Image 1 (tube, rainbow, N blue to C red):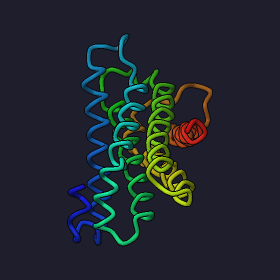
Image 2 (cartoon, rainbow, N blue to C red; image 1 turned 30 degrees about the vertical axis):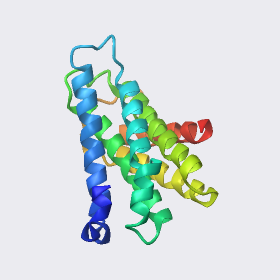
Image 3 (tube, rainbow, N blue to C red; image 1 turned 120 degrees about the horizontal axis):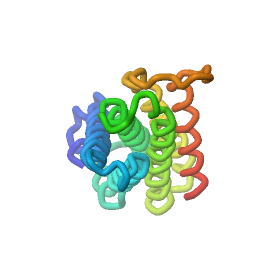
Length: 194
């Protein structure tokens, strides 16, 4: 809410940049800290989905939106950009955690990265769409779905540290292409589920 109560933050887009940074760090820290010594018990993809869902729900719940409405002139535009920022930050943070951590082998991590990308996109989409269904209008639904999916895909494809993973023999596509596909798959599952 504080990000949207400052007029200069809204005018410059800093509110959305801060939202991306906050969710990025939240996802990254959760995956790194919760999987540090529990490889068999905690799954990074489930953590990514949970964090993305929770931060999406928290960013656009009824109390937050009620307070933000008084601060912005176009709440529908703000909501879709907020959905995009949350999805972007969660995705990028989750993938950065996987590529920077020592808990996933660069030789074998390809599938884990794809699974985590799908799960993060799904969690963000479910949270963003659920809030729109309950606290928005019907005309907000498609833009929220669109921008949440865009945020996840942009977050996935702009994660430079994905180059740390070694391409398995026999594959022709880069990991960024695979991750773009799986994040779109996860977003589609999330939209269908809600």
